[in-house]
Length: 192
Image 1 (cartoon, rainbow, N blue to C red):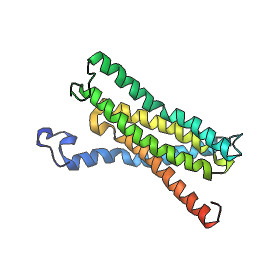
Image 2: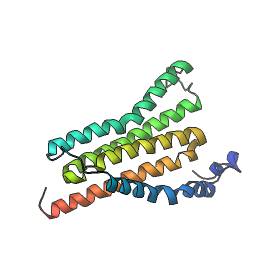
Image 3: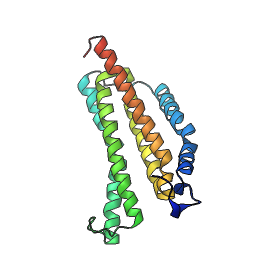
Image 4: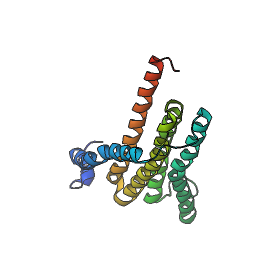
């Protein structure tokens, strides 16, 4: 999106201003994500009862339920708001701006949840039992990041979602790279 003449003077109205606005939180959210997840990983004791692959997958699925809670919360919020607004037909275009924001949050949360779930399910097959504490840490951090995203979007519009996007994306990219690293290592050692 280029400059928006109607929004002159507001950060959303100018492409360079939007980039500066979004960049303001990058220095904190990206390294902060890695620092918090790393610190929690080192502070949390290893989990018990996750020695077999079946146990690791079952535990991961249970924690993915926790990670799904923001998605469920947005779904229920949309349900209630549609009822009270009378915006029962999403194709009719009668939603409020807040309801449209909830819909965008819903779609983005689903996209990020799929990414998280696939990475965590893959990790459950690649991590050693003592490393499985990463799964609940990632799921709880994901919930935190999605709440920050939702709250920021509602509070400050499109640009307000930046910290939540950065937190979620930092977590998911970290997990993606971790899975790729462990997968390559397992292929090279003939473990797959």
